[in-house]
Amino acid sequence: MLKYIAKRLLLMIPVLLGVSFIVFGIMSFTPGDPASAILGTSATKEQIAKLNNELGMNDPFLVRYTRYVGGAIHGDFGISYRTRKSVFGEIFSRFGITFRIVVFAICLAILIGVPIGVISAVKQYSGVDFASTIMAMFFASVPQFWLAMMFVMFFSLKLEWLPSIFTGTITLKHYIMPVVTLAMATAASIMRLTRSNMLETIRQDYVRTARAKGASERTVIYKHALRNALLPVITVVGNEFGYLLGGTVIVEAIFGIPGLGSLTITSIRAKDIPQTTACILFLALLNVVIVLLVDILYAYIDPRIKAKYMGGVKRAAKQPANS
Amino acid sequence: MLQNSLQIAERPNARQSRFAEIWKRFRKSNLAMFGLAVILVIILLAAFASVICNYGNDAIAQNYDARFLSPSLEHPFGTDDYGRDIFARVLFGTRVSLVVGIVSTALACLIACFLGSIVAYYGGKVDTLLMRILDMFMGIPTLLLAIAIAASLGAGIRNLILALVISQVPGFTRVVRSAVFNVADMEYVEAAKAYGCSPLYIIVKHILPNAMGTIIVQATMAVAAQILNTAALSFLGLGQQPPAPELGSMLSDAKEYMRYSIWGVLFPGLTIAIVALSLNLVGDGLRDALDPRLKK
Image (cartoon, rainbow over all chains, first blue to last red; front, side, top):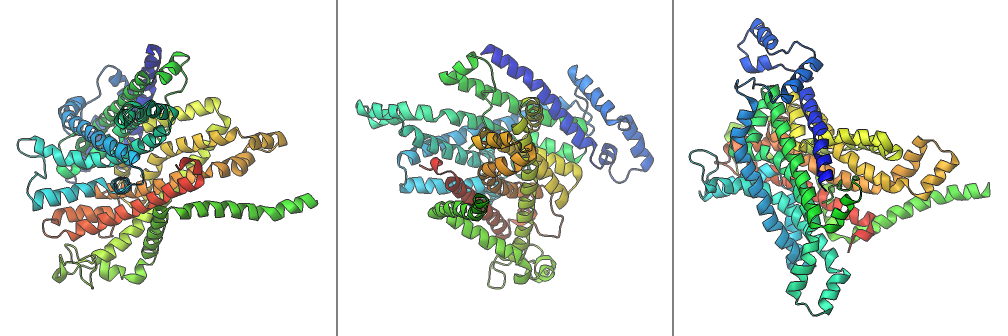
């Protein structure tokens, strides 16, 4: 198991190197230059050329990329073109809020998705099942930002219960709408997966055996069926994490949240190459680490998978995301 | 000779009955049929948008006497902050969303079929190398990758499509690869190899058609996802430029005036949701129809 974890950790290095190369490449081979973005339209051509030269923009792409990686190995990810501060200083000051929102959203999605999924599987084809399936379909198809706007319209403008924007002292109330917005689509996919897994496990022989030996319905469902049905759900939670990290960009834009998502957008727009690369690199790192943690957790919980790792490390954990 | 002509005569029938069988199973699902009906109506409305409304007069021309009107017979969805008919703008905006969603998915699908079938057919080092490269792309959340590409290239429909294609290819290739893997070991593929068919012929004629079910289901769902992504990117100002209507950018405008009028928020968003929902319903139905074993 340790060998497997070590191997996965080592595999992360080329992935992150690749991510930095991709982002660096996207930012470098597209029109526009950082100096024009920093100085604005009022700057003269000479000023722009001078600043671009100072930023090292006149060197060939590979030279700049090698210089960047060389710095990164020594822990120097550069200075933001826009704010002139260390890129990771900026990231760490904004990361907390984003992380809180994503974690709250995941927890909420599980709290909504799993129980409803169980109920609609146990009562298959009932009214509850039908209603929750339709609701799940709806929430998987609704644009997140639109849902956010509807919430703002109803809870902020009409009822005036919740603040629509992150200003003043931040209380728990500020988090409610962003978290709910972010959680709904994930809750829908967790619910659908829980439902289909439960339907499958309920028909297994060991569940029938449990019933035959006289276990109460509650024990059968919660002790025998649910435990096994939840296993694939764990994988989905890992996959959804990356989706939520992307989704925060939109949610942060709507609620004016000073988090990592809004920092990324601002940096991309300003052609701030070091800041953008660092932001996306950081998000990718987070994503990869969570997926790894989920895989380890999965192996820890499911002895069958653990046995697979013990007997030869193959690409066992690479399961396609089929939700 | 006789055998040959018999084979030719039977072929269309065999194909027809396969489609007929899938259609028969698809028809049984009420939800899938409902989704299909809704999406067909929406496609028709979007295709004939210029017959139903006048682009210049209804969707673009500003009319300050008719701002923030509530829905009426004349303006079924009301009017926006420039007095433009929201219904007309939604129709033309839906057309843009559908085109972007379908074109970007189709292109991504083509690229993914090419890459996926090659790596799955040859396997080994080619497979490992390409999958590692795709892992790098998959490390970046899809929406974030699309935003980074679209924002760097500059706003516009063509760049938007390019961004959506690039961000979709890695995930799609994985699906194609695993679908091809399932088929590549079949006996008829081995038979074709023994026959001396070229790899290209085997991939195009034997493997891809049999992996098509999974790919089509994935593509249907992907169109829905791309329509949502298109809206999100336009909402951030990375899509169609004003005054041309697009559902996401309409919502972004409506955000500014939602204190005064809710119609500009309600209808474009509902339209996106209904389009995505019906495509997902069709995708679900197709999956069940193509693989009856999945249905319980």
